[in-house]
Length: 238
Picture 1 (cartoon, one colour):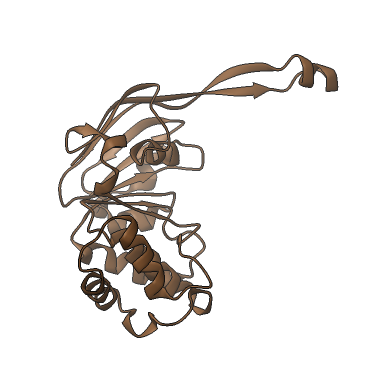
Picture 2 (spheres, one colour; picture 1 turned 90 degrees about the vertical axis):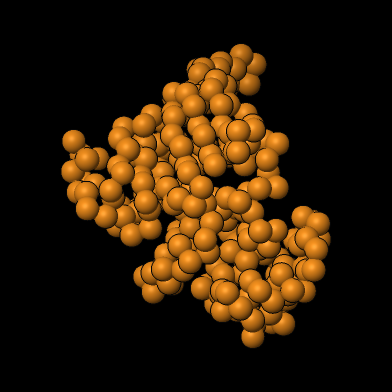
């Protein structure tokens, strides 16, 4: 489903010069390699985690897969085509935002995104998702009145509204309490989607992933095929 090969992303970054005039009149730039020669696969129906500390390259890889960035070298394919032309096949959820609008009801939010994606039988699709995620009775409430857990669910419904092949989650449990986080991790496998997620929480990765790709300083440090029975911390520290 997802094939990443020799992926490299290099950014031009501005260096600090000497003095105010030096910074304004004679700026200097250098190269920063955020992702270096990364390769991995995500098979259909599989849940794969990208695990690593802040700055390991996780979000840069996600941004390439969702078309926000172009790779400097290498390729990121979804169903054998470049990721940037396969965006309709992707559902996206960022942990720091549900991408749901306040001053609108949950139903209105889902209807808005469904129209953007050209979803047919919108009412039926919203009913199906809201039942699946347990938010049906809240659809007519304004999103700003939702609990954090409810906002997460409406965010997931938004990501799934067009029935994508792939669900990409970037730090999905960021800032969540233990109960809400546990509920989210328990429900994700039930969605029946190919899932790629990023996290820097070892235990979260072990609970959710079929396979884990560990990133360090923009490169693949290890790939774990049996995470539930592996001492991942030992792999990371080793």
